[in-house]
Image 1 (cartoon, rainbow, N blue to C red):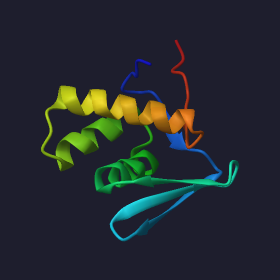
Image 2 (cartoon, rainbow, N blue to C red):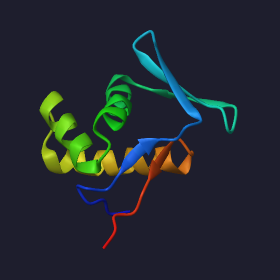
Image 3 (tube, rainbow, N blue to C red):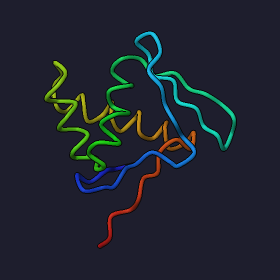
Length: 96
């Protein structure tokens, strides 16, 4: 999936998270399953809630981590697609 900078991304209402021992545990009440994110994935989870758009999340990742923007974009797209497939985030189409 191609993401525009303005693509809205947000956690689903059934997904809640907690930081446990340096990892972020995301519990999905809809499926009664949990998922573990490492430190970087956990920070991205926070950025999803804080910034709410693909461009905002990507800016945060590039600013906070020592990563080349093109690689950060590809990795972020992959992570968001996986989170969406598991029902943890909602990715809304951009009108137009």
